[in-house]
Image 1 (cartoon, rainbow, N blue to C red):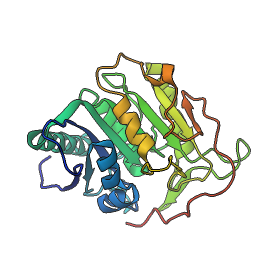
Image 2 (image 1 turned 180 degrees about the vertical axis):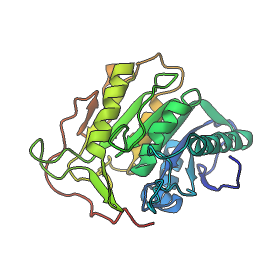
Image 3 (image 1 turned 120 degrees about the horizontal axis):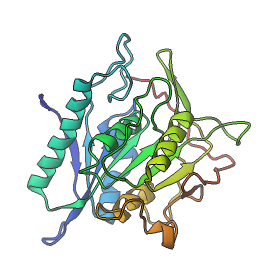
Image 4 (image 1 turned 45 degrees about the vertical axis):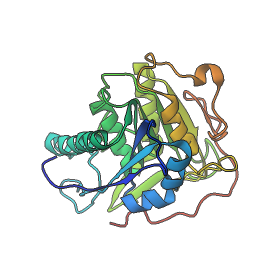
Length: 285
């Protein structure tokens, strides 16, 4: 990508000689880091259980032009084509590096982002759909005010679109919004805009809608599973060779690792009630 970059590589414990691993890229939130994604996502435990390689990049920063607001990843309309391509090439380099050193399943390469990382994932999914088999957007989206739009992907990519709710009067809880450095982001609007684009273009997607606002998703996995097991399972259940718009979930239903507030298409019954994770200051740079 034109400069030295770093990432955390998570490999399943006790790999067997004949194992071939899916590869999941994980892009962190504004106030987070590669290390905090590793920890909060319980990624090593998940990789050991579900047998995948995780690639967790370190950000070099991306200031909104004309401000001091560092979004960590490039996704806003002020970012130049050169800056976007630089990050896309970093993805290419990481994938090539992992492919050169491990037996990977090239039919199962997914990208997962949280907040700012999800907003970038929405751009990466378009730019690198020829390499990706799916993507997962956790409080991300496209189009909302100053976020870059969806300009279509060359391939149909199965997706998870999750956000923290629309707030009253549509539902209880709070709306998934964030304001940093005087710049507001409405992930409710951006996520629904992403769903509209995916629907128009014939992509399969799952909608997940909780009611806790812009916080870590309130996931309660089945006993013995890691917290985000359902998100990682989605990636592994949707390989590259699936027909456009297809999913095993259409006939088999969602797996038990998926929250009850998820559904195929824009049909989720939103989460209700309390028990939300504590909010953090996501604007820390």
